[in-house]
Length: 197
View (cartoon, rainbow, N blue to C red):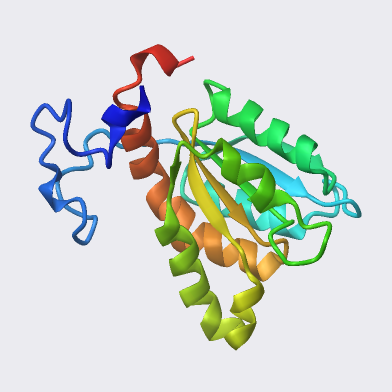
């Protein structure tokens, strides 16, 4: 049933004027955007707590500073099944329009976020990781090759997986996720009347 969702601009457009959707992203095709987002934030860490979570705090602040709501924050250990179950659960929640995780995207053996998230993706959003690494290069140089930030659509909800550092979380949330999540959420859900739990 997902085959009719292709890139969000053929079927069921009802005059939404999507031939511009690969342009600068700021024209009049935004009228199905989600104006006030409900964000679900997941910190993936076996050592931190929600009281000691600067990366999660940075993501939350990026949403709240733009008038969005953080609906829930969760902390899960670096465990493939726990991470996968948490991301899927949040993506299915009716009050969550975007899910952002922080942590577990590196290359150590216990970094499992990408492996947990990717099988859930009905659609991948490769431009997110590409842009994140491009912006990160200015801060960390060639070390971006060890950064596996990814994003995709899960159950009609955009899910973004950021690294665990506070700087990386702030950069991804402020520069990419918060500006684009409302548009992506509107596109991802607008054909799915049956999924709007």
